[in-house]
Length: 120
Image 1 (cartoon, rainbow, N blue to C red):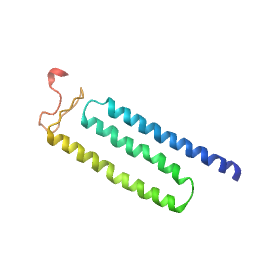
Image 2: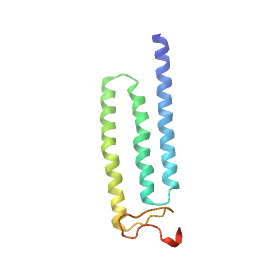
Image 3: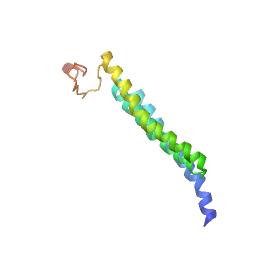
Image 4: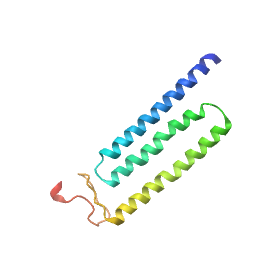
């Protein structure tokens, strides 16, 4: 039974790495494809966090306590910094007056950042 488990762990690690790379690739595609800064931020922050988690989990499969400690610290750091950095970039875009280009954008700020009614 232990032989089967030891053979399955590298395969599980490979699957987790491929999943992480796939999620990050989809996130990059979203950043290129999305129409404005605000929507691109969503794709970027999700790609960073959701793409790194499978990669970090693949690292924990080694079972080494030092690596697991580092993975927990890196995951915690990403959990805290990804939303904060997305907020700061979004706030900078808002203060610059960056317009929303998404067809169904709703500007709740009242500063006329959404696409004009003629463009809808």
